[in-house]
Length: 389
Ligand SMILES: [Zn+2]
Image 1 (tube, rainbow, N blue to C red):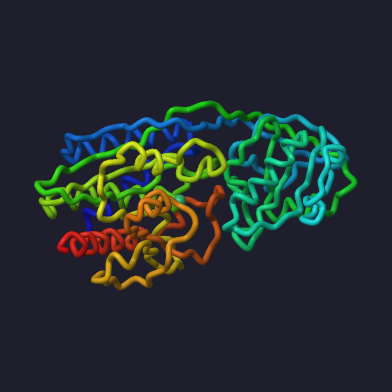
Image 2 (image 1 turned 30 degrees about the vertical axis):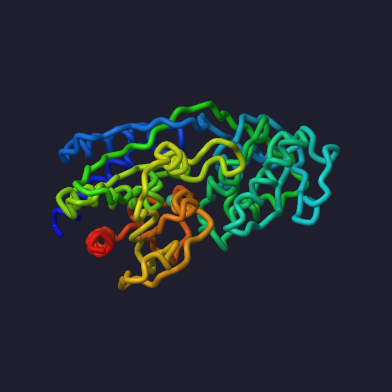
């Protein structure tokens, strides 16, 4: 256990070293290099970087100030992931959920829009739809509210719109304190400037394969990209740390099986586009492989959380037992790519009490490292159980 925890700590510190690990960032590339280096240091000879086309995001800086209050900075404001550059001043147009149903170009063209819409955490497509519609109508920028049903009130989720496909519009988000500030100053003139851009990006899934003697195979995976502007420690440096330790601990297990350890980029980009997520690209690149199961590590081991296992295609694993409560797979995550192919999926996950996800507060401090160690030990047992069948 000592070794395991030391390794997990080292992985977390290495993966979270850079200020941001969103798709196309320096941290994203550094994570790829680190993962490859760990696979090689573990003695894997079949290590590859599998390219796939996606969209990267560059962020320079942002300022959002109240021109009618001595340029006071709007508190808790951040750019949304995949914002384009914007420079706009004026009194914001407030748009409620009702207004959004009939919004016109006349109302929003060239304007700074304040979107008073509280999202359903699951309806990513619907939320992106708002940003995409305002973009299409010619809004200069839209400011969203990071709501506390799904996020902490202390910091804004930079993935509140989760990578919409924007042509020209800037997108920013405010935490609760920023929303109150805006609401109390609805008649004020604000200035929002965002320096950011998207660009075509070839990313890579980083894969190590342990060739087995038989023809059974399984995939162990975790995405290494994270929400911009933070360590993205829980989501998902924690999962990558588990994956790397699985690669170490399973190296000599179940020699009949071929094990693939796949670290994915771009977990949830491009749901509305034709470009694949990292895990989709992986399944598409290997159409002939018949995987018996996919074991996923995404967001594990926070303090004050409840550990669960999301299981997909569970009827194909009638013998399977675990101490974790089983939940059906949800609509997101890398499980989806394998579930489409009717591959049983097992997603080790913790349900958090706190809501730091996709905010700059998702730091290593949120993680209970001994608990991540227990996850890995349990996952090894689960893998043994599945491979014994
Ligand atoms: Zn995740």
